[in-house]
Amino acid sequence: MKAVHLLAALALTLSASAFAHDPSEKITVLQDELLQNVPGKKAMMIEVDYQPGQSSIAHKHQGTAMAYVLSGEIISQVKGQKAITYKAGQYWYEPAGSEHLLSKNASETKPAKLLVFMVLAPDEKVLIPLEH
Image (cartoon, rainbow, N blue to C red):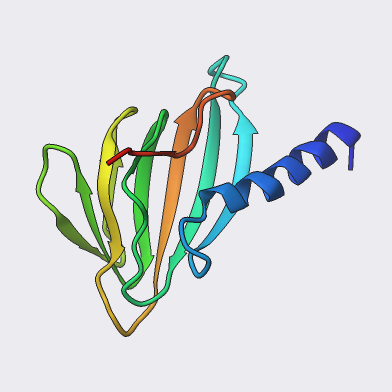
């Protein structure tokens, strides 16, 4: 592995823990790649595992996000919209800068898994907590 790739992998490992809002919420960065055909942008693929009843803190993304429910059911609400429960196989889109007020496992007894694909600038933050 080239030194630059090793450093990038280490940085991803360290930064992935910054995505976690709760010790039981598991965040896995699956891919983080510069887009050669879109200078100044990168694509990220992130897997979010929610324990039963678990939710993320209210946050926003600097980049564009597309989410796909891999398993279980996720309740999601973006500012200005109503909360929607998405089942496995359903998906949604969040424009850059959207305030994600609610992202929660809809079940109190079963886990849920979400796949998130993002496009953002290399220096933009994946997640910014919203202040109350």
